[in-house]
View 1 (cartoon, rainbow, N blue to C red):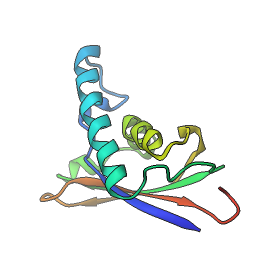
View 2 (cartoon, one colour):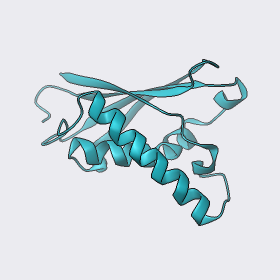
View 3 (cartoon, one colour):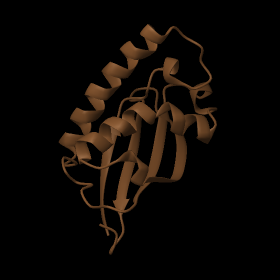
Length: 126
């Protein structure tokens, strides 16, 4: 089994599937998240990491700035992370269809809001 953990910025609320916003505003947010997620994935040693993987399991820890920010449903949290995961997959040189979300935990850290995602490939799986 091999795994890496990447620390990403908390995606802006505008990327939530429940937020109705102008497409241009959403696109600006996506561009920023894509750039930072690619850099963070590279810095964690993720460049080319996913080549040949059949499944990459995802375990996320979401650290919110406020306790209210932690009242997000898991399905919406994963959907909000879509742009982040797309950028990570591109950096890992794999298709994001091999990502299999496994767990998500929420915690409170007002000084350092972030999302930590551990990507794991189990033995015999890539």
